[in-house]
Image 1: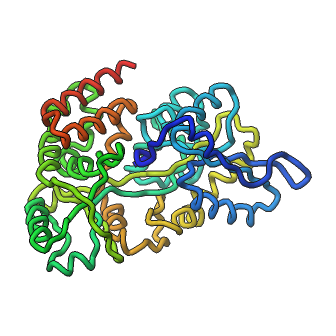
Image 2 (image 1 turned 180 degrees about the horizontal axis):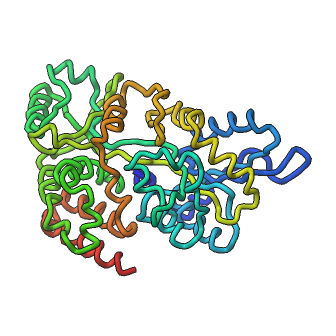
Image 3 (image 1 turned 180 degrees about the vertical axis):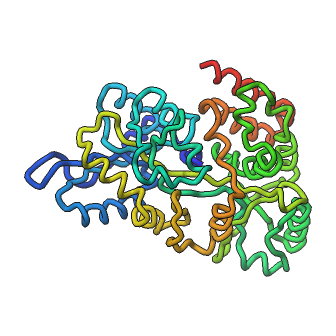
Length: 382
């Protein structure tokens, strides 16, 4: 998520651009120009405040924009030799402002020789650049899973399930108590992926971690893989309705089989930043990305929410709600968000639509997977 969790696009989004900090170079020192996603305002502001305390001569200008603006305008600015010094980049591939796309167009500065690049976990490294290079600073690590209201679970005598059979049994138990186990806003396009990603993590990626690469080599397909099982189980869990949230929440992996050892949780780098290949303020930009990659920078960036540092160092105190995410990050029982390894956003958009059509009853699981296969093949050729 990616990435994938921020998909609002419209011309009106231009109005969301806001800026803080200094606007031009002056006697107080050089500017450092940063552009970040509006959803990361709190995290970035926290880091910038601490960065300026340790670098008082650097004046920072930060602009926040929504996903649609960033994915459309950033590549255009960078290709024109302009753009901010440091900016939001989506990990992996899959959209115009992703690490792989920008790096392949020579729009990102290679950060491989920076100290932090030596300590990246393998799953983080796999989406941090292209051609064996490290081209971004991963900032936060988040997951997709089932979020339970602990009080509501206790009230029906339930607990977080560890097998898919237990998931269905818990659904029945909740229904008998006049409650709904899961609520999902499938009318919002990006939300449609959450359950299928969670289930495919176990049905597909637990045994085929290189599934996207195998697809690119025509060794498999969505239709020929356990993605079919994931979508069938998704439909089994319907119908989904609104439910009142509880006060105490806890996130857990959504098991896709009856073997807990095969359970995986989609978890990956969610926020990341790149350095302009031709930054106006290179020294200051490098100082900032190194600060963001440090233990202090990572901990500060993730201190206000329920995300984890993308570069763990053991000093971060995570929110109890995401204790399982932290454990799985350490145990390496996570898989990257699926779209981070897809050729571009076409596959994801088709996936959104097909899940919607499945719940609307206008398509079938085999037809949905064939549509995704066509999108993958067509986008590979682009």
